[in-house]
Each structure stands twice: as structure tokens, then as C-alpha cells.
Image 1 (spheres, rainbow, N blue to C red):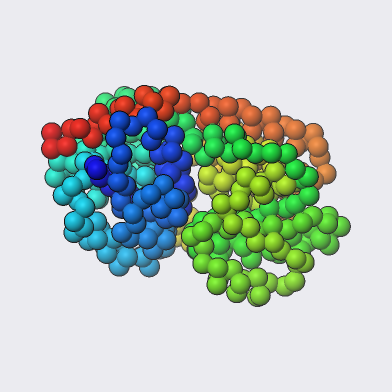
Image 2: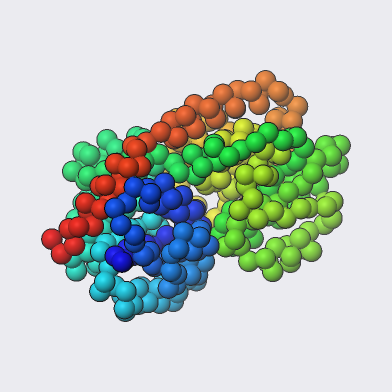
Length: 374
């Protein structure tokens, strides 16, 4: 059985890759053993994890410093693993700071490299695309506007669309919209920064008389002991039901409103038609650097794909309960606004649900992996 090294690095990429692999695997001409760095989604498709991704999942300048030892250990674990000599190729998934280093090294040893969800060079550090040209054989893209950029640099690419959106779109069912959904992110540092603010927000909503059920949706990568501590430390805000992210199909349709960290979950909420307030906080240094170099007017993928503000974004100092409550009340009290947001959602999800047929992608992937050593 041929082996493929896969490096996901964090929950979102882990999920997207697992759904993508489920789409193309029926069309592959032979079975493959997947191994590498991943999480629960990766193991659900038979992947063998040799280093847990939760030990690497960070974002930002200061945040990375606390994981430096784990990052070094992950690289050593991959490069010394006995599977490596039997591996036909490498699939990198997002997580560019780690994946660039190991991708260049493995390409230099003759391993063909495919990059699924390459870094957002259109947002910042555009020069990275020239680096990718030196070691990436094929880029698999989830945003339609990326293809022109990669083609201009001579990097072979395929627009595959968004597997998570396709997956949800086929499985969602209608339900009573009686809940406020809290989605503080898949990284522990995100949860620690955002959940206390979200808890204070729902307490204010109770004060205003909005008796919505409160559901806290948690990724499997989040440390549950920290959640217990945060809930205990928070002033009482009524009963909160904790829901595992694997149950998104059931819980999203119950959302009347959501407060969500910026990320893939914004697109999943869009599929479910849930109005949302997008929030995010990082360290002051990370935010200052990002503000200087990131060339984007929006951070939520919903707004990026639409090219305008479909949902409100509250970042850094703006991310506080007073501003969040203000935006949430706008949705709860204004059905016309909700209708406009859902119209924007349909536009965005329509674009991202498309993509090249899985059978053609599978054929191209196998063609690339036949080129080991060339």
C-alpha cells in the first residue's frame, strides 16, 4: 500500500482535508495509507497520527514562541519516521510557517508536494508564492479568485471549492431557531480570550429579556478543563449547553444568532443561514504587525468572498460585550437585516460549493504522486 504524508497543523485544516479526502478517495485507483500530523478528523479517515496537531495550533507572533519546542519536535518526528522512506508524496494543509520549512526540505529529497489550502498570499506576504513555485507541484484552492494568482506565477492549480460547505449543505435540516450559538474558536488561546467576553454578552441579552437557549460549540482540540474553569469564573448567565463540534449538523439550524470567532465556522454558519457577529482578539503585538502588513478590509471569509461586509466584524478593542450586544440586538430586532444577510450568504455559499469534479482531482493527485524522485 502506498503511503502519503499529510500535515494539517490545526483543527480547521484537519476537518477540510478529511472531507476533501472522502470526496476524492472513491475515485483513486488504489488504496493509500495516510500518516503525519493531524487530529480527530484525520484519524476518522484512517490517518495515522505521529504527532498531535493540538500541540502546534497557534497563530501570531508571540503565541508561536510558546510552542517553539513542540514545533521542532514535530519536524524531527516526521523526518525520522520509518514511513518516510516508503512515502509516495506529501500533502500540506494550510499552516504555512511550519509547512513551508518541511515542504521545501522534502521536495529537495524528491518527494512531490501538493498544497491543499495554501497560504493566503493575496492577503499578506505575497512573496511566499514565489517560494511555493520552487517546491509545490500542485496547489488545491478553496477560493475561486486564487486560481488567477497561482496561474500567473506558473504554479499548477485546481479550484476544488470548499468541502465543509458541500458537506453541511447536503445534511442540514430545519429546526426551531431558539438559540444563541457561541463559537469561540478551535485554538485554546482563542477560547481563553473570546469565551469570557461571549459569556458576559449573553448575560446582557438575558437582562434585555431575550430568553434564548445558550449553546457553546467546542472543537475537539479545545481543552475541556479550561472551559470548566472559564465557566466557573464567569458570573452566572443561566444554563449553557456544551455541544461538540462534530454535532454541527444538528445544532447550527437551531441558531437564531451566533457570536463566532473569525474562521471557517463563519462559512458554516452561512450555510445554515444563521446571522452572526464575527469577533477576534490576538496579542497587541500580533495585531499591530497584522494591521501594518495584511492587505484586507475584512477578516471573515464570508466578507472576503463577498467583497463587502455581509456580517459585522468586531476585532481587538472593538471586541467587547457592549459592541457585541449592539450588533446582536440589531439582528434580533430587524428581520429585514436578517434577510439581507441571508441573501449575502446564498451568494457566498453558491460560489464556494462549486469546484472541479472529484474524479478529475483524484486523477491529478495520483499523477503527481507517480513523479516521486523526478
